[in-house]
Image (cartoon, rainbow, N blue to C red):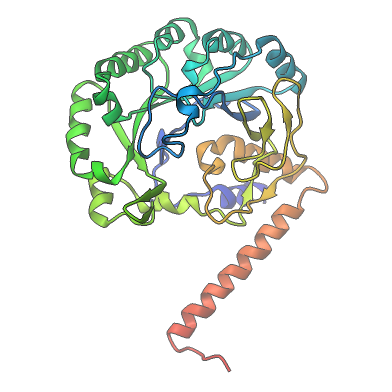
Length: 346
């Protein structure tokens, strides 16, 4: 019963492969963690990409670069009594944090780290040389093609990528499928493949020429970028069961922890003080999910389901989920039958 229910809850369409690359994230191959934290360590960035959600934000150039309080961080992680996977990412470039390598050296003694990074900072080499690759869950190397060309940094990106790969780090290069790049997508894919770097394109989320993306992609653009509309459906998790806040959370530059990007009014403590996860799963409250925790880290989602199914008093999120799911399916069936004139409303 439990295996059947778990399989139903975390199942994916058969024509979506279980690959190392999930939409725009590299999937973690190491399954040894109990909890996952997505840490926006700084808003400062050395790029200013047109498609970035914080494009032209003053903090891009002048945002704080706070050092990580390593002793307090390690104490807090130890007191939580869990094995963490900490992904450094957010609105800025995490390798700009002055003591990021030193922090990772301490974190990886017991835990795991991952990165979303543009891979051009000088200390990337230091990281690759010093950090145990078995403790690096993954690196998503963000390939910002036009910015790299603008600042003549293509070769630095390639060099750092190949170094990480040689060191045994699980790494994938991904570029945003920004509509103006569509006609050049294949050219860049071939260029980087010849350098030894396979490139995946991820859905752009935002506005361009008065159109909202990703819903406005044309079939031609989908083909040019090598995207799949099936992955797009993963953004819509409204009323689905979610482990945000139960064993996963997002961390602000000041250390404050929240369940996810859509539930920032709720707090789960502070990464430098005390981490307080929720005691149960939640029903996703937003119609379009930007976290996609179920897909980013399916292992930790499955683990949350298993823990909730075996603990008394935690079945309510499942009851609410199935009730809403059945109601939605009945509504869709009624609309379908109405279109076929099987019956008409009185």
